[in-house]
Length: 233
Image 1: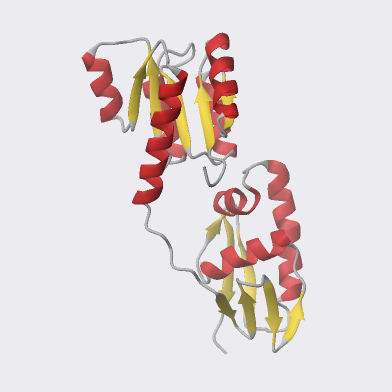
Image 2 (image 1 turned 30 degrees about the vertical axis):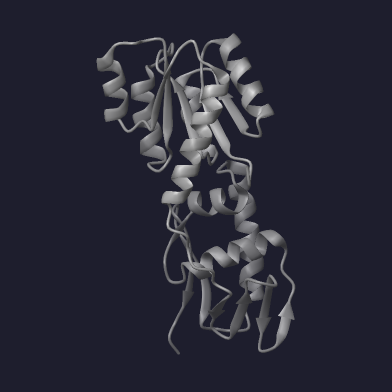
């Protein structure tokens, strides 16, 4: 496994939830275990996952309804259903809602891992690999993606890792809005109140770094996000 994939597990059975989260953790996955649907929704709002594993029979709402709530938050997040139901109609309903797999209880942990690895490998292969960009030209500045430097007319400007990642995201989407959620999940890997407060501080730092070119500004789009704007002279 090239990197640690992040899994959301929503399972109300304490024994099974503990067993699966521990076993998947031993197999190299980062597992976030939610014990009910509402907790699963909240975790989806504040974390970035590669795959969700949803129990169909939950105390507060069924897994089918939960999957649709999760899709409204993150339409790209694939999910697997776990269920004790064996009726064909339930299986078909799961797939019709967009499930990438459907496992019946009792769960074979080894089979689950094999299926997860196969699904993740397929999903990664399906994604079109973005071409490597070695630099971004931002007005009179040059953001070098290979040596992680910001240069102004040959002068090197030192950035922290977070400053660099934030500026790279804004530069990639120059003159386009980057939402708070997109920024926080990309740069901080978590969308929450504390990181949102930190974001404002980092934006302030970047404004100072870019202050030598009056054409450049980082615009705060009220309650939505930020935009790196390069205006005409």
